[in-house]
Figure (tube, rainbow, N blue to C red):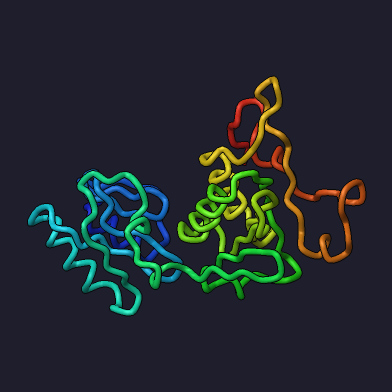
Length: 234
């Protein structure tokens, strides 16, 4: 079997929503396609961010190939990205290129443009209680930008709750959100180092006024991972 080339890896990243992979000098890490050690392309909602900085002839050839493969209206160009930069390309976006962020009714909403695809009867959220407004703003934007969720919102206060929305029957999306929570330290631990068994809450439960003792979770963290070891069960 022929070994995959970095061009084939790029094709899979663009067409098949590939989340992880390596081929030659190309690497896929979640929402980024990386050439050697520098991100060259990043998913951003329904668009892509292209690192147009000049490093080498090979990098320029790859940039041209990407420009030919993606419609111009789906491409956001950024420049002056440091070589070997290990962060997100959206750090270099101008304000007008960022995802919509709306303040309404005591909440701040972060929208991907795909939020209408969420079925009202199946939609729900994993929740994070925050005490750092600046941190949660970054986390919510990151979750939507990286394609972890289509929609996120948090309380419009210095302390409150953040909600990460997905369909309750989408196991793959549950795993993406849980991995995101783990990677960003959004799940508290007990004194013994065990993860708290946090719950997923359907929107229909919120609409029905199921809060506190009245709330009975149908989906909990321990259905996906071992709370002691953090290892996946499914």
